[in-house]
Amino acid sequence: MSEPLVVSISHRLGRDVAKERLEQGLDRIRGQLGAFVQNVDYRWDGYRLPFTVAAMRQQVTGTIEVFEDSVRVEITLPLLMRLLAGKIVGRVRQQATALLEKPPPR
Image 1 (cartoon, rainbow, N blue to C red):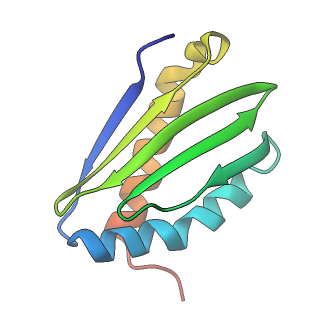
Image 2 (image 1 turned 90 degrees about the horizontal axis):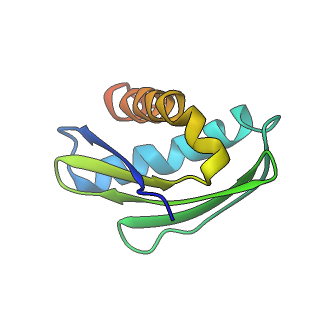
Image 3 (image 1 turned 120 degrees about the horizontal axis):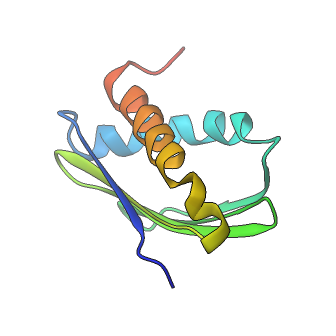
């Protein structure tokens, strides 16, 4: 099994607001990935969100943990998808930062 990719994003929102922003953005992100993803499964457990994504006939697993001043995203990719690790990390960082910095759309 390969080492997980870890992305940490700082914020100044506090734990509850950061979690709320992530919750609001997950459906939107899920819609953006629709063409590439066959299945997404996630459920909050307090401030921790374990997830599984089926994409390109591969399974990606991970967790999102919300802390008072940061969010930590850990993703375990199958070997084939490790070739896309740089792009995946960049996209995760970009999306999470946008959700945590900008006010949610109304």
